[in-house]
Image (cartoon, rainbow, N blue to C red; front, top):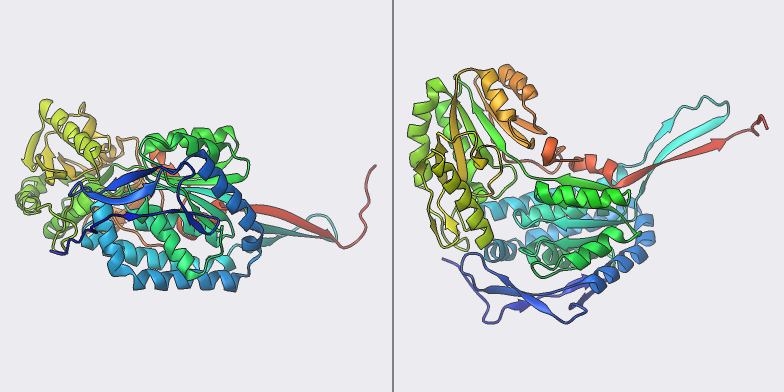
Length: 491
């Protein structure tokens, strides 16, 4: 057991124009530990004035940052990776106390984020553009990529460090400056901590600015961020419902937005699949980070010939997962982020049971720790049958033929990730091509990913892609032509 709480919770500050400052109003709010309910930190309750200062700082810093040479920008990202690695033990503890993140997922996030920083260190050399053949004699045409300007990032609480860095790194590496608004459920690990790391690494003042707000008080900040003509694009990771509202706001101002949203990620276990490996994969993919990852498996479709045997192995494994204190390195499953999340998970399970579903494991909670839960016989009219419940709950269904499994897998508005378990890799590839998902893993979990892959979904799971493909989103393509000779005109 390694839980350590400060006698007095740390009072954090926003980073605006390179300075650590409180909210203009002077107000703060309490950031709570989801496991103990104790105060983890005190955070500035920022508002419209803070957002405007952040925008102005980013706008002022943009010309010099955009003009900075690729080698200099690369060195800063490599330095940030080193700082993060050096502070890894501290960061693990911060994620446990603020977001309920157990050590395995915290270590994964640090590894992923350092990889992302090192991958992005090469981005400044990539968006060079291309030569475009011209049909006009003597004309030389170039398509040149240029940074947009100020980008607004909105980062989530669930993969706070990894997804927080993903929110800011690609825009910054492309030469943009950023105003980051982290989730009010993780203002430190999804925002202020990253600002500390980048400042320590030598990033110039104003290149990254972080503004925070109290729960329920995002309105004034959002209004400034979405109405300011200086903000040219948005990068949002979160729920599909919120993403739809933000896309509408961005569209009213003709601004682009990258969206990585929710998922209802199916795993299809074919008749020829390795049963033991499929169970191992399902346990990990369904319950890692207590089901609070957009790529967690939500529904397992098992060929009827394996269905009973699968459950005989799967259910005892799930029952053996004991939620506990995420600050203890031995803990594998931690708490849900807050009481609202707990209530939503409990409601989804209760609704399904009331309509005839059976609970084979879990279904109960202790504090904010909801026991890993397995449901069968879930009727199609239960919301949880096709809607994301962001917690440690998975449905298991039998299927008779593979086309039926594909149809069931596609019977949801989401399309983020999917998994096909089979001994026949080519069959897996064929079925994967029929599943409506941005990412399909044959003989692997629905969950995972590396910094360099084209991460993203289809349908209500969002649009745009991350990895180096994000360069297309966070740069403009400008055409420049040079005429060798004086041209002849018809007028």
